[in-house]
Image 1 (cartoon, rainbow, N blue to C red):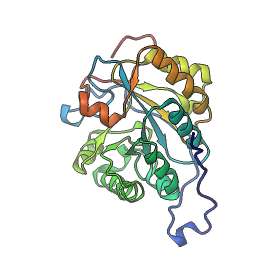
Image 2: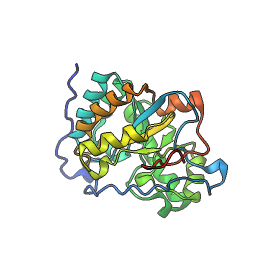
Image 3: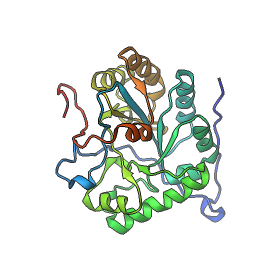
Amino acid sequence: MRRFALVGGIVVAAAAVGYPVLRAPVPEREVAPASAQGMPAHLRPIYSARTADPVLALTFDISWGNRTWPKVLEILEKEQVRATFFLSGPWAQKHPEAVKQIVAGGHEIASHGHRHDNFSRLGRAGTAENIQTAHAILREVSGREPRLIRPPNGDFDAVSLQATRDVGYETVIWSVDSLDWKNPGVGVMVQRVLSLAHPGAIVLFHASDSSKQVHEALPRVIRGLRQKGYAFMTVGEMLARYGPDPTGCIRVPGRTGC
């Protein structure tokens, strides 16, 4: 197994030497609406894929930190799972070798925007600028042309969704939230994902350092899903094969479907 090296170091006078200035980490606040049924059909974000086949996608947001992502990559390599990584522009620019290791592992690169700001507060021009700035960085660092974005905190409104479409991106939310951003306990996370998993699911994890338990829960989640008959795809692969589910939503315990 390859060892995934910690990269990056202390940046002195970051702005002066051209590095992005990363703000101090703030707690994740996943605020995505449970569904987007009230939105015009052509603007609705993607919560899941439309399929009855036992497939799903594991996704990981990264905005800060350099300790968690190597553990996640090692687990994915060991379990032979390819996933989708939603990367923030400043993080990718600060950790280009990390991005290259993610690409080398066969994983999909997607965008998490340029700043961890709620898109609904940025307006149309601000949202477009945020996405385009991150896109330029991700393209340069990864050599890929990402076209999927998960807005910070899962936040969106009709204006930001239109701006996202205008710059050639599709908004991807999730249908299963592992709650790893709350660090609720490994058992809670494993049980939650296994109980809420469904065909076409997009499962939300984080590989930022604020997610302190994801590397402990992930092996159990992967093995448990396989025992239930699931196979893994990237979000892009799943959408290309099956298309988005127009009735998708965030699943909650105790309720069947949406």
